[in-house]
Amino acid sequence: MRSKFAWLRPHGQPWKRGADRTVFESAWIQVTDQVAIAPTGRPAKYGMVGFKNLAIAILPIHEDGSITLVGQYRFPLGDYSWELPEGGSPVDEHPLDGARRELAEETGLAAAEWREVMRTQLSNSVTDERMIGYLATGLSEAQGGHAPDETEAIALARVPFREALEAAMTGRIQDMLTVAMLLKGYHMAREGALAGALARAMLE
Image (cartoon, rainbow, N blue to C red):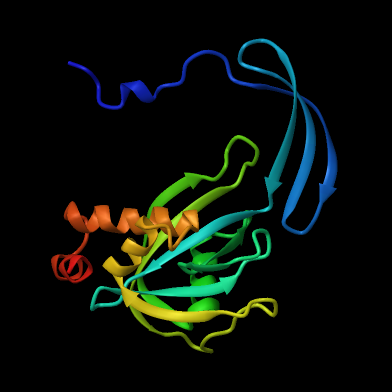
């Protein structure tokens, strides 16, 4: 009988790292010029972006099945983005502490219940950035309220879960952490991984 997920095992040889040189560094990233040996045995040069924070994404679900999104202009592409509450958690910090902080700062909410539901690699061909996603329920107003960073001009919207999911599936929401977490929430609601009343409210 075939073992489930047996196809996930790696094959061949991994990349081998050689000398590296830092070409740029900031408080958030380090860009290195890397000498390497490819899995084929051929020498290669590799430019890699190393991240000093874990990416954190939070799916905050209210009892009525709605969720809270944040809207803001993003610098790299110069466009406006509706997203789940997100942020960075220093690698030496417990990611749940970072998630609690980001939810409070960006939305003014606190959650009674937290559940890690996703781990992903973001653009793993050129960066080592990883994401941890949390589902947050039992929402209430956080002590201190909404307190974004000094560079963040954030708008808030509380919308039905299915409406947010439709916006992601039709390209109106393009932030990948948000798209992935909305799909995860939908899968959990459909597969019985959430409380029945909450799942029904989300799927209405």
